[in-house]
Image 1 (cartoon, one colour):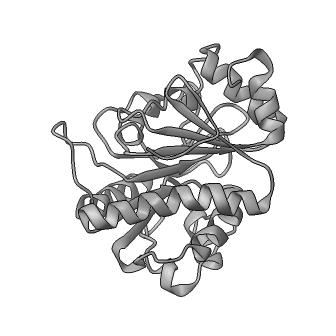
Image 2: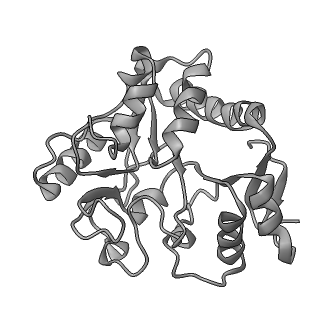
Length: 252
C-alpha cells in the first residue's frame, strides 16, 4: 500500500506544503507505481490530464530516477482537437517540457480533423499496450487527473451525454462547454478500471469541491463519479485546499 498523510473512507489524502514536497510525495507515489508496473507486467501505462498540470507534472517526471522509460507509455487522459504546436494541446504541452528520452513515451492521437476517427485511433493505441478486464476494459496503471471549477475531470462535463458512455474507451466531444469545443476523452468506465487514480487539487475553491465530493453533496460532479474498482484513489492537495476540504471534518 502506498503511504499517505491522511486516510478517509479508503481514500488517501496527501498534503503538499511546498515545491519540494511535490517532488517528494507525488514523485515517490508515481515512481513506485511505474517501477511496480514495469517489474510485474513489463510495461507501465499512465494517462495524464492537461490544463495547468503539465507545468507541474512534466518537470517531476523528468526528475524521476531509475525509470525504464522505453517501457512506459504516456497517454493524454483527454485532448483538445488542435495541432500539437497549439498552446491548447495537452500532449504538445508535455512534449515541450519533457526531455526527449521521456517524450518518446508519449502516445500521439493522430490527425485532428475528425474527432470520431481520432477517438477510434487513440482507442486502438490503447489496445496495443494495455491488458483488459474480463468485461473488456483497459487497465491503466495510473491516471493523474485534475478537477475543474464545475467539477469536471478529463473532458467529462456535468450533464454531458458522454458521462453515460459504457462501450467506448475513448469518446469524442464536439460541444465542450469549455473551449476549445472539439475534444476526445477517456470514458468513466476506463477511468474506474485503473489500478491507481490520483487527483491534484490546489486552492480554497478546489478544496470546497473536494468537500462536496467526499460528503456526497454533489454526485452530479463528473469527478464524484470517479470511483476506481481497485479502491486506490489519492488526493494530492496544498494546505489551502486541505483546510477548505476539512472544514466540515471530512478529511480530519
